[in-house]
Length: 67
Figure 1 (cartoon, rainbow, N blue to C red):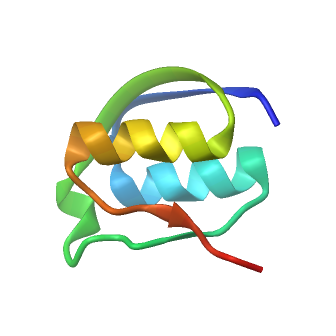
Figure 2 (figure 1 turned 30 degrees about the vertical axis):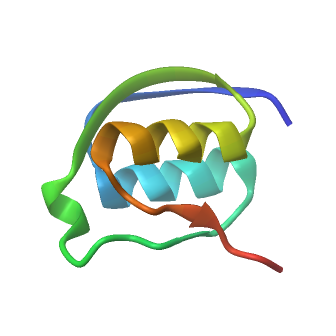
């Protein structure tokens, strides 16, 4: 599902919360101190590619929780 989402100096917990709201998925794999990670990004696309981009930018291992 392609959606648009924006983050401006957003801490990672807020990013994950917004992904849940927009894409309707749970995200796993947060680092030990997620509030220390901050993201600014405009993105249009599906959730898997979004998480790949975030992982590349922040060097994290986020993924969609399997149902």
